[in-house]
Image (cartoon, rainbow, N blue to C red):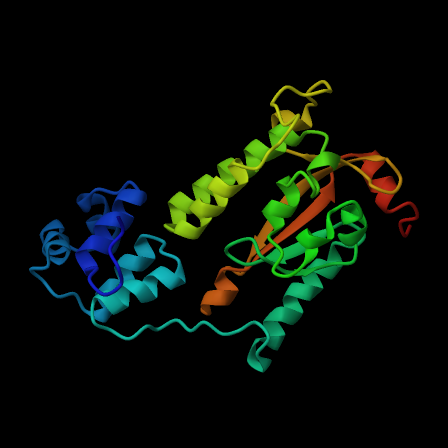
Length: 270
């Protein structure tokens, strides 16, 4: 069981993250440019690390900002990374950038989610693809992954559901392991338990050359019945120093073939 915030130590956290990153003490010591003996003393509690040392170790271990604050608290220091609500006035520029990116994907769907895949924003191209989704799945807070895999969600329209479901579950599993976020593990288990009739890895169509290098999202348009094939892209704020902003992910879906491009953008500008 993971230690609680009240009794976890710097050593507990460093060992846990070092093992998650598959670093030996020597590996981390070399990365942080300190001696293995010094790191061993920090992990065992025989040495009290400075605030700067903890931040250096956290950076070398690529800890999420939320976890860097947690490490500082365990060491007796105040957190240095803020977590602002995304609707605050001082976040307006960042949210404006998010909306600009989402708008740039038009006429193709794009959305922004938080660290637990809760919908934060979406462009206008997304909603027409969700026409057949049960209304309760669209009531805030909307979990995008549940929306995708639920039997009364987008799942019946996904033509490669088995492949897409496995892709989502594997990604969630990796993200949970990399971040140490137990809520992602819970979401993974809940999605895995959803009934998914027909979601086998055996495809109803020959596997395309594209599917051998990336996992496409292939679905049937709810209004026109057209077969649409998308490749997903992921964008994050690489220099964010606010926790909420650092945990924001933009997912865009670009056409994977000419048929999809023409279906969603029949009259592109010349």
